[in-house]
Image: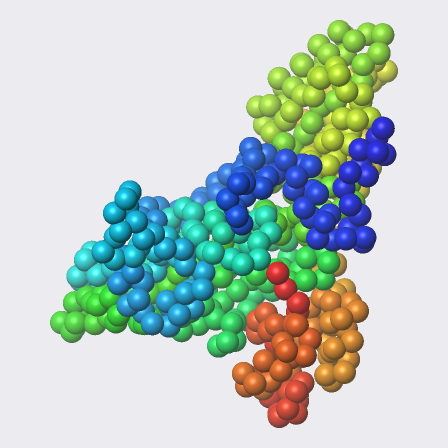
Length: 478
């Protein structure tokens, strides 16, 4: 029965895409909705998002940002003000054309992103250098009418946060853009146990309307890249379009410099794909809805064991996110598989023999290791164990990323590796869009970023052979 239960999840090596969907559905993270391309996030999946929200929001507030909320509806005239921006989003915009039975005089866009409506408000609020900087974030939903969808990774509607800031100088805006990129990197690596590469996007891959787009790129366990977060320096593009001016200290009227940055529920998809295995989810303890599940092993002394399990639950729930599985209609083995599939970091087993020995058995989800633990040391051991699991999951993911990052200096090797092994490929690139486009057309790989921490060493462009010190990371991606 236990093996049959696990077999309900397709093997990763057999069909990674189906495995991903199986895990989402079986672990009850989300389900398909009656609306095309939309998902229903179920409580277990939403708790992961709430934990992400809580940890990120704390960081935003520590860096001086405040939360606000702007309308989901954007008048067409506002969206069209910045031509490059609207062109970038045009294929994905959902439009409201009627209110009740009446046709609207002007179409209204359902928010694909909020630069235009927020900048229209900033033009009212910002008058003096004393009003700057404006550091605002909002948690909301957005709609992008995607043709091809997959839960958490790409859906018609998704949840995210979007920061929008305004600054007095170009230097301040650039510092903010890089500061928030680093906030994302530290958060994703520390809390989600996901190693990333920080870098700048090529002109071809940057956000529509941005002067520069910075990114953190993660590598999934199938060898494909995932853009885990972006931070955009918008320059003065939007401030000039929306007339966001301020009187500076020197008495001159000037345009502000703006930024925007965001991460979304696609981070949940990243957690699934980077950490999951053939038994289902493996959740980092810091964002797991349940960190410890207590499974009583019942026998002749059912009530004694249940009482002990309930006592442990009462003791642990003060400091850990803990669940007691005292359902009597399922065997312990079935429960083990159930909670492994849901990715709970630690399973705590307690049976009659454990009570006699005044111990519990702790089982790690990341390694399967069983640890016999004296009850009087449980609290301390459990805290240390969760930290070790968090560290180990990051270590495993980092080892995978490092071993699947390859340096290539000729295109034939590039094509072979991207087809057979995938992963990140580091190659010299001249900066020419035609060479970037040729790689994409020939291999399906895109330029993910130019790493910020790379050493600048001369080499020849992979395609045209021109001397360059630019090194780019390419990969197939989601």
